[in-house]
Image 1 (cartoon, rainbow, N blue to C red):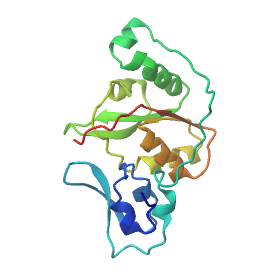
Image 2 (cartoon, one colour):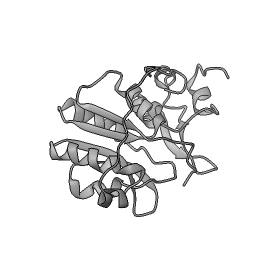
Image 3 (cartoon, one colour):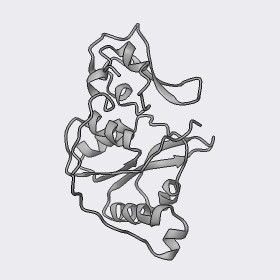
Image 4 (cartoon, rainbow, N blue to C red):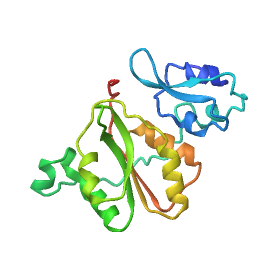
Length: 196
């Protein structure tokens, strides 16, 4: 499939994952978040605001992937204590990591159920909020302005643990456009979640 060369082709591209890197990086606010007919969050182009600068096309992680994977990665097995595993998914690694970051005055990003039963990426700074981010949520999460919030925290020197789907983690990396020593990213395995 051809790589898009204009914002119009980008937003209508069938490979769009809804990561919103393009929306978060648009300098004129021409790209907006909306739900398509199937309920998936997708970028929507306001052609009146678009200057055709092409930043959205250049930043798209689907069409500009960075392959930094190792052919021989370090692998670890993890299993938390029984109480933690009982209130968790996947062995309970997330709450252990989150506690570690928060106990060292860091902040954590993850997916939380909202009052309207939607799921959104939020930033927490208290161990009392870890339970909001625990357990799998098998729907697409709303990104909102989380990439911008993370960048602001990183620029202030805050230590951040970002947990998200692979497309969201790639979107954050693309949005930031540089490495930060105080950012730790954990990709959650995904097999294409349903819309809300």
